Image (tube, rainbow, N blue to C red; front, side, top):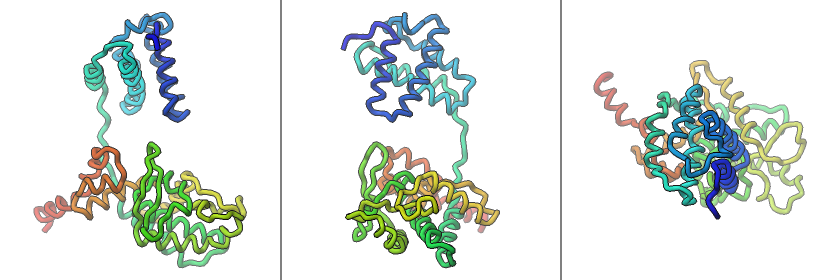
Length: 327
C-alpha cells in the first residue's frame, strides 16, 4: 500500500484497521475521538484534508492534550489512547519514522495524575449475601418460579464468589459446559480465550440442586440435548415455561434487591464484579499471598492486575499491627 498523502486519508485507514478487530461500539468511540483530534488540528491551522502526513509531529498530541483539560483525568486518558494508537499505526505501516518512546514519555509527563482511591472490598457483605441466599431456600414460596429463581441466585452468586467468573461469562454458560466429575466449567473469557475454571464442592452442590428442581421445566423445551440449555435461566412470569438465559443486568438488579435486605451497618455498594475481587483476595489470603496462584486462578493476562489486590490480603501485616498496638 502506498503512503497516504494526507492526514485525513491516514486517519480513515486507521479507523478501518480498528474495525477489523474491535466491537462496533469501540469503533464508534474511536471515530468520535478521532473527530475531536481533527478539530484540534483544524484549530491549529493543520486541516487534516490538506495537511500532508509527513508534517505529522508530537506537537499535535500536545495540542490535543491542551484541548482535553476541561475533562477529568480518567476521561482524558480514554481520549488520548486512540490517538497514541494512531501514531503507533503510522509507524507500524512504515509511513513515518517516529520515536514512539519519546512520544509516550511526553504524554506521560503532560497527563494529570488519576485521583488515588482506597479500594474497598466488603467481604462481610458478600458473605452476608451468600448466607441470605442459603436461608431463603428454607422458606416457603408462593409459586414454583419463585423457588427456581431463589435456587438459581444462590447457585449463581456462590459460583461468582468461588470461581472468579465474570458475570457475562456465568450468564452465557450452558448446561453442557459443566464437567461434574472433575468439577470444572468451560469458559470463553476476554479476547475469546478458552479456559477450564474450577468450581468448589459447595458450588457444585447448589448447581445440582437448582438444575434438579428445573428438570421438569427443561423437559418441556422439546430439545434433544439438555446440554444446550442455559445454565442459569430466567424465571419471571413474562416468559411462561420457556428457558432463556438470564442477563447480566437482571443479575445486577437481583443483587441490588438483596443488598436492601442486609443490616444497615453493611453500607458498601457491591456489584456482580465485586465477587471477582472477593475471589482474588480470598485466594491471596488463603495461600499466604501467592500472586502466581491468584493470577492463574483469576485468569489475569498480566500479573500486575493481580498485584492490585495484594495489599488488600496481607493478613500477616494485620497480625503484626495487632501485636504492636492492640495486644
